[in-house]
Amino acid sequence: MLLLLAMTNFSQNISDIRINEISPNYDGDLTNPLGNKSPWIELYNTSLVSLNIGTMYLTDDRENLKKYQLPKSDVFNISPNGFLVLYLDTTEHCHPLVAPLSTKTGYLALVLSNGRTIIDSLVFDPSAIEHETFLKRKIDGTGEWTLTKISTPLLSNDIKVYETPDEIVKKLDPYGIGISIICFSIVIIILIILYLAFYYIMQIKKPIAKIKKIEIKKEGETVKTEIIQAEEEISSEVVAAIGTALHLYLLSIHDYESTVITIKKIQKPYSPWSSKLYNLTPTPQRIHLPKKFIYEKNRSNN
Image (cartoon, rainbow, N blue to C red; front, side, top):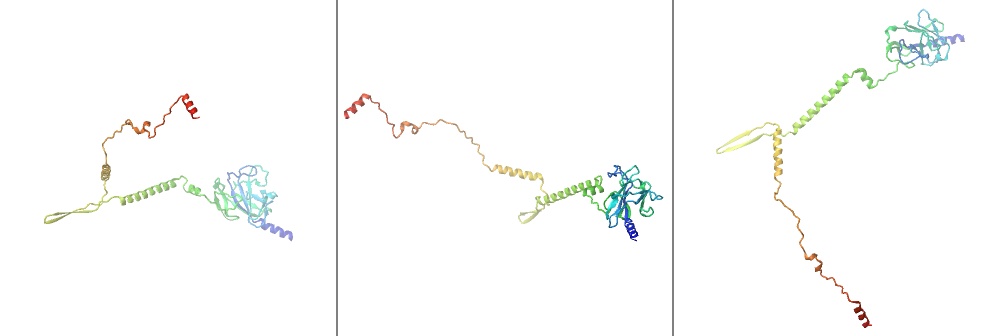
């Protein structure tokens, strides 16, 4: 009874394995353990316990459910809500993860160890699946199958792929025509706004001729003549003439002398004040006396 209970529990748990994703015409960077590029399938464990799918059968033939039996190996342990990738390669192989099956038949089934009970199967048209296109469930282990350009081996199918702004723009506008039109439109709009802004600012600052009234009085009557000038812009010639007149006027108010002053170098006149002959204290003169006279003078004093 315990043995039957264990077999029943094992049967219920092992039946929770599902085919989750398949690549019938794979030609990407993923290679199998033999170094070849080959189709692959992904299995998913929907249970909450770890399961080993060794001794189960995998087949691509509806009439032969025992076409290939998975060997007993620890590599077939699938953790709870975990994934396992099996490669399909019809060439000679010696690796447990490589099964000698083909996707060209359009049929794939996972069979229990008894060789009769199919726990999951998939029917597809391999000719309708292009390269770099994959079949996978929308929700892991359940849900409908869908074609997609994004593969998620050993990952959840419900993973959200975030695209960068550059990728989104490249996807929406691959040739850059739209972004070019938008850029040119922005530049043109900015130039129009600047033109209008400067135009109205200059209109405010322009000098405007105001309405003038001139009254002419004659003897016995008064004749009023009204000269109306519309608000017009003063022409550039008038502005230039006014500027020239103001410039000439400012130049004319300065004094200019036409007298020519010539400075010549002259000789300095003689001045007695600079002569040593006319000093206030005359320089004493030295008198040279004979030696004999000096000797006699000193002798008489003694």
